[in-house]
Image 1 (cartoon, rainbow, N blue to C red):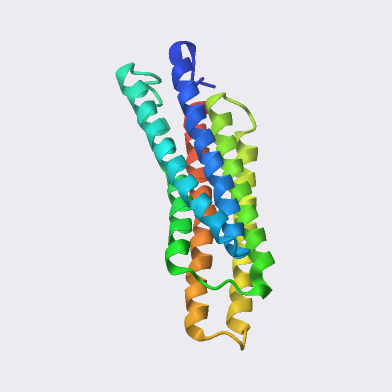
Image 2 (image 1 turned 90 degrees about the vertical axis):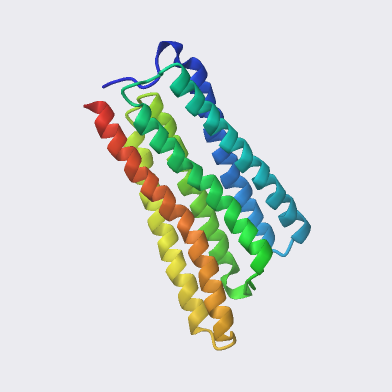
Amino acid sequence: MKKILVNRNKELEEEIEKYLCCLHEAGMVFNQGINDYICKKDENFQGKLKKIAIIEKNADEQLKKIKYYLFKYNLIPDFSGDVLELLDSMDDIGDICKQILVELSIEKPVVFDFIKEDLKDMVELSQKCIEALIQGVREFFINSPTVNDCINKVSFYESEVDKIEVIIKRKIFDSKEIELTEKVHFRYFVNWLAALSDTSENIGRKLSVFKLKRDF
């Protein structure tokens, strides 16, 4: 098994960890922001919206630093392309978290009482999906044998999100009290939420491929 980060790559390792911490924080703030929106805590929601914009910007800066170290010092030449592709893909996580909160602040879809708990469950599982992916990437860089366990968790949480997505949509479209326009609007909102775990699973597949390439 080839080791990814060795010897003088300590600085790169630290920058990657800072980057992953930014994405982890984005997932937490996203979860909190959605819950604030569901509970109509507008002031708190606006605070999360501002916070996630800062986090996403910090993540972008960290990614630039990582690219700088990779190219300036020609670190991990055998795997630099894979590392860049993986970390660039991870940037989508922060982007999606921020974009969903921004779209909520603009479109303001109505959250109906009978699906609030389902939504909270969906968002919590999405956060767990992100956390499992981030842990898998960490394990990849330290050559841990548990990378596949993390990838399997990502797939599990993604499938659970899909189940709740279907439940929510059925409840919405079966309701006789909601106008069709509201149903369609809310369906888009649910699709946004589902995109987060879908993206995490897609990155998990990339991670699995990169792990196989590294091992051989």
